[in-house]
Length: 403
Image 1 (cartoon, rainbow, N blue to C red):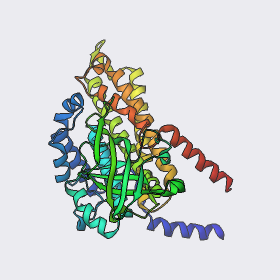
Image 2 (cartoon, rainbow, N blue to C red; image 1 turned 180 degrees about the vertical axis):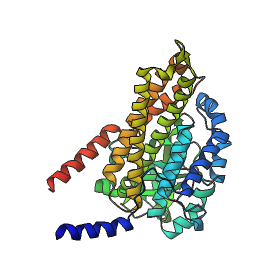
Image 3 (cartoon, rainbow, N blue to C red; image 1 turned 30 degrees about the vertical axis):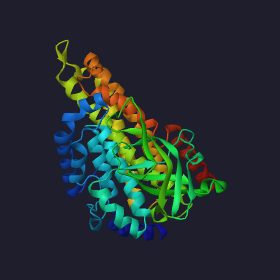
Image 4 (tube, one colour; image 1 turned 60 degrees about the vertical axis):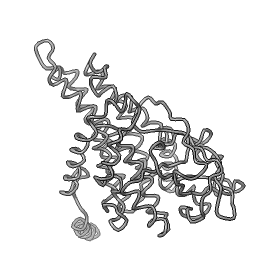
């Protein structure tokens, strides 16, 4: 009957489909995670406290990130990258964030925003000119936000005016991550303001372009080693060859690039949560009060069991969204799920970690207070939590309207 035929089909398809758990890593991925963990302990951990205090990236770290291949994870070998997968980028970001979320976001932006935009939308000429640099020595910034265009990104005022040789970009961008160290800028400007958002175009701009000025560097609560600056464009001339994608398609590039970027931020937040959790667990297992380990008190047992459950749930949301993207399936709602829930989990776990450690958790002698400060950005950048809730709600309504 019909059930028997369905059973046969299911048996055939199950043989074709992998039944591995989302958290099951390949041998290569286990090696990657181990390698990134060792890299972070050796090259990042010794500098975390001072970078946070100085709000400045240690000059030794960026060259080492490039040397290790961590800035061109998905860039194919023919363009100087290592040719790995999106999930490999996600695993790398999580591992770095366990040690310093500020370093993780530098790697995240390069891999899940900049490189993917160039790979997806770049002409062969642009790929040949810029991908080898992005993979080997040049940090880039994603210039979308403005003072009046945050969540409403397409309300931007930066314009690109046509000239005989290309375009002149005028305006200013705010909250631009990595701007102090970047050698390249992916700039969104409106080449036809009368067309509204359909005039927005993406331009590739070199740091040394006349009229490009790195403005005020923000003094931030957290992720202080990652620079966040104003970037001013005073009639910056850009060749027509440096349009990424097509004229007037910048809005599409921005939207489609931010979706994988949100999975990357989800991974950063998981790493942050895990890093703060690990530090607190080591302390409370060792700490004695009333003749026994603090970790043996039932009130704390329930708290750290619940926290690990939520970290694992967050990790599964990220890995699922990444898997959907790699399989060319719709993942917009899942990316929003991941970014929203991972940000919430990071803030909750980092806050609890400080409490579990008591007085020392409130000091800079231990890493938990820094993780606590770093966690807040998760609900703000690459889409606020309310924007993600709005996205999820919109997609839910569309699904039910179609039933």
